[in-house]
Length: 284
Image 1 (cartoon, rainbow, N blue to C red):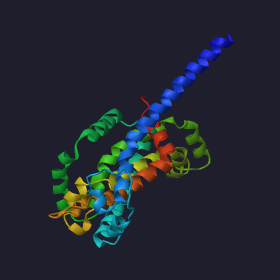
Image 2 (tube, helix red, strand yellow):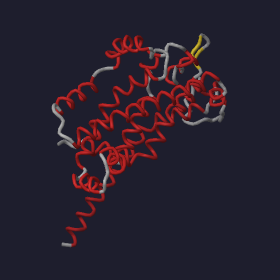
Image 3 (cartoon, one colour):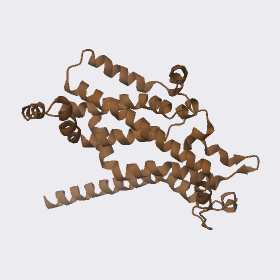
């Protein structure tokens, strides 16, 4: 019996070791591009264009970072990205969360049709929506404003929010609603005081994803904000390419600044994001 248990433990230990090695290999493959991005941003022009590939900066420099942060156009683009991302997140949350609550807590006529339309809308490419949105925004005066691309981005985030949060709201016991009614809470107060805190994990998940959708946007911001001074970070990375060549270290520093907020959000909020996406993926 002891030999069998020892053999079983040895087999399980080997399996765990193989799983750890496999996980390490996959993590290295996914994280290496980020490492290369940051490493290149601290290299000099000579080292960047050298024939010998270096995997870390031999001549460490912060000039590419200083060049970016000292550029007024970069600071404007940074502000534009932040404003558009925050506006898109706000619009998405204001419309998506109440919709998910209504479809999760109440019997909505044609609810399955609504959910199907949300799923279909997430499959539509952004290029298909550009022309009708451009015509609509032009008539209501949203071209050349931050609100135009924010609304366009939110149109793609709201279906995701509804699909993700609906199982959360549906899983909350009805007894909580009854207890809130007995204590004198109305629907709105019950929604903000009881329902929202009860699904904190899901709320954090959709807030982060909605913000990142706005932060990473290029198509809508380029289409609806034709003025160069209103373009986000994603639209201005081309300026390091000219007739004399490409400043790869500056581009890498620019890309690192663009990517770092995304990485930091996922590092510090990964347990909420993973838990939220898992709960929202449960099939009913």
